[in-house]
Each structure stands twice: as structure tokens, then as C-alpha cells.
Length: 324
Length: 280
Image 1 (cartoon, each protein chain N blue to C red):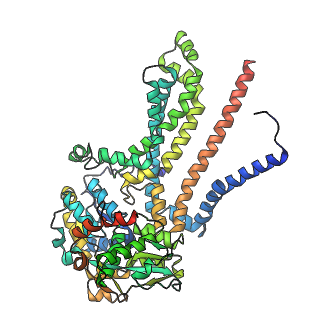
Image 2 (cartoon, rainbow over the protein chains, first blue to last red):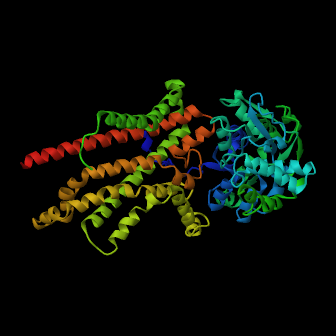
């Protein structure tokens, strides 16, 4: 029974250096990206240092993953959907508070945005955020309480209304109208995509641009179409080293190299191939991204802290809207 | 209720509706698992189940079962013995407590272990200082599975041990048998089929548990992912065929358990009849 061999292979040989392993705790749609990126980094690390490194992955809704790290999941690096989730880990003392300044571009190696995925031919004629609030439409989005992507969805709609000078009341009315059309809230972005693509629920899915690009390539993707709204939010999924873990395990050097490699030409090009908007112009040539007018979270909501307090904290705007 | 035989039509309607129901909610899903698993051919199925992540998940799942089931057998026999053969204050409270894992949602059970052993939980800091990982490690998965599957063996044994009484054991003791001799020669033969039944149910649940394990697993691929969690991950990665291939392994465990259970029952009935004949 080979299956009963001891789980951690206990080697009888002389003390070899402990195998170098990194755990990357990430959000939901990055599975395919990191599968390829990890392989590239393992090659790169072997070539530059001669060391073997193994990289383990854990994926789930961004908020849920942050929670797990706070509760003790031993991540060396976190690559989450939004800065607020890393801030939450930082405030529990596992990550230095100034993590955003430690890597280029606010520790965000690539960006994305929120787009719509509709059934082939766009039968409901959905072109912009306002169309989503039309009565009778069925909109799929995950739960902003647990999913980072869902928070970007929500803030993109809200910001669109503000950009059109409709004020907070107009924005609330729009988001309220959209969530009236949501039949089911999955806990993560990938769950919502599966609901829309494979279970065939809903007229439109609010999705990360990279998630939409991937869904189009997945089985059943030929029956779908991506619609880029004229205006959307610049979604910035940041990365950080979990100081407490790497100091305990002695993996700081490789963890730092791992995150920095995301900014390298190879890392950027892999990100672009998987539908993330890269930072370097060379990598941006890998794929043509839809021309969307992007606004940053800071320009509309000030900061994640403020956006969270106003919209996603207990009893804040989302709770009031959804409980109606 | 009188024992008037039902009309042939009523009987037909009842039997056929039961059969249709069984076919729809039990047989059809089971068949669909295997159809989806082999949709891409045997080769694709084999590739899916021999993928390193799937093999790691299988190993972990078997390890968890190999630890959880024996522990629960010992605990279950002890609990069945104490509660079935003896009267003491607090006995009924204890019987109720044994059922607790059935009453608690598995997700709550998982969260409970995070509250106890998580980094910020009651024992978390103490464990952390000593470099011991419980939550998001195999230990946590074993604990959660232990909790969820605890009642299966005990529940099977308590009624049986209660109804069989103490006479045989007392006779053995009077005739000079020691504790272990009494247990292995008298008690165990009486409960062995119920015990086997409990073991099968316990194994099936230990292998298939999702909720509690999902909460404490951390979902680290190739490390803390059990088979049911691997199925979910594969499904979410649009690898439907691979997901169903791995699911077919779980379905096989269920089928084997069913067959063993049916054989055990048949054999125990035959033995029972033969014993009665022997007495006459």
C-alpha cells in the first residue's frame, strides 16, 4: 500500500539543509496565474542561487484568506485582492504596517478592472453600470463581505454614479438596484464565475477582467461575451511578505525575491498572458486590453479604510442595502 | 391500523414511486459521477487521479481515516461499555453529549477548533511558542474529523450493549475469566457486527467529511487538502473531468462500504439463525 507511506518523507540521511518552501496565500482567481508564475520563479531561483524551492498555494475569497492568516495559516507571502485585507493582517501584528512602501507601485505588481460577462450576443443589451439596475435582470456577483472582487464590483458601480455627478443618493440608488437583481451571493469570485458559466444562472456576471478573460477560454466560454463598461475602477491587488512567518522560517530572502520577480519582464509577461494589466509597457503588448476609463479608489473614496468604514463594515452601506 | 392487505394498485404505486425516488436522488447522481469521470477516457481518468496533488490528497485522507477510525473504535467501545452496561448519575447526560457532533453543524465544529487552537485562540499562543501547528495542518484536520465522526461507533454499540445485559459477562467472571478474557471472549463476539457497522459508517464519513475539514484545512494544495476539498478545487478550476475523476474515488469508497455493510448484515443474520438452530 504505497498510499500509506508516511506523509512527511522522513529521510534517514545526514542533516541536509531543510527544503526551502514558500506558502503563497492568495485570492480566488489567481490559481492559474500562480501555477505558471511559480514554475517560472522556481527555474529562476535555481538558476541564480542553485537552490531548489517548492511553492505551495492556497486560494479562496480574499477576506477569508486574510482571516485564515490572522488565525495562524503560515503564509510566507500574501497576494490578496485588495489592500484592506493585507492591512487587516498587518494590524494583527504579522506584517509591518508600512508594507505598501516596500515594493514598487504600492506593492501592486499588476492591476485589473471590473468588466461584465454576458451571454453570447448580449441579448439583454448590457453596456454600462446603469443597465445592471434594470428591473428583471439577473446579476451574479460574489458577496462583498467575503470576496475582494465583489468589493471592487460594488465600488466600481458606486464610483461610476459619482463620476456622473449623481451624488451619494444616486450612487446608493444604483447599487441598491443592482443588488436587488442578485439572486445568489457566492463567497468568492471563482464560485460566482462557476455559478454563471457552468450552472448557467444569471444574465450578467460582474467579474475581474482577468477572470472574465479566463472564463472565455474555459469550457462553455464560447457561449459568453465580455462587455467592458465605458468607466470602471482600477483594481489594485497588492502583495506582501508576512514578516512574522519569514523571520521564523528564515525564508525572507527567497520570499522577497519571489515577490520582486512579479515585477520582472517574465513575471509581467505571465501576468499579462493571464489577463492582468501589467505595469511595464513591454508586457502590455502581450494582449490588447479593452479601453476602459479607469478611476482609482483613492480618487473617489479617499482610502480603503474610509471605503471599508462607509460601505463594508458591519451595519454600513452594504448591510443597509442588502437587508432591504 | 388493521393488517388489511393493500390493493394491488396501491402497492404498485407505492413501490414504483419509491423506486423512482431512489433512482432520481441516489442512483442517477452516482452514475453521473462515473460518466463524467470517464468522459475523457480511461487515460484522462488515470492522469487525473495520479496527479501529485490528487495523490497527496488521497494519502492525507487515508492517513486521517487510519488514525481517526481506530481512535473512535476504542472510544466508542469504552463509551458503549460504560453507558450500556452500567447505571450511574449523569449517564443520560453523557449519552446526549455523545450525540453532540450530530447536532452541531460541521462548520461550527471547525470554527470551534479555530477558537481553541488558532493563533489567537485559547491554546494558540502556547502552541505557537513551541512551534506546534494544529490548525491549518494535518493535526487540525484529524481533530475535526475525530469530532465529527465520534458518535458513529458509540451510537451503534450503546443500544446493543444495553439490551444484551450483563448476565453473560457475570457468568464469565464467576467462572474465573479475567477482564480481558471476558471482553474478548464474551463481549466482543456479541457486539462485533454492530461494531463493524459502526466502523464502516465512521470510515465513510471520515473519508468524505467536507465542512469541518474545510474550515481548519487552510487549503494548501498537496499538503492540507483532503480528497473532498481537492474535488472542490478542481471543479472551481474548470477541470470538471478531473474533479469527477477524483470524486469517483470517493464514490468507490462509498460503494465498498455499502457492499461490506450488506455482507456483514447477511452474514450476521445467517449466523444468528444457525445459532438459534444449534440451541434447538
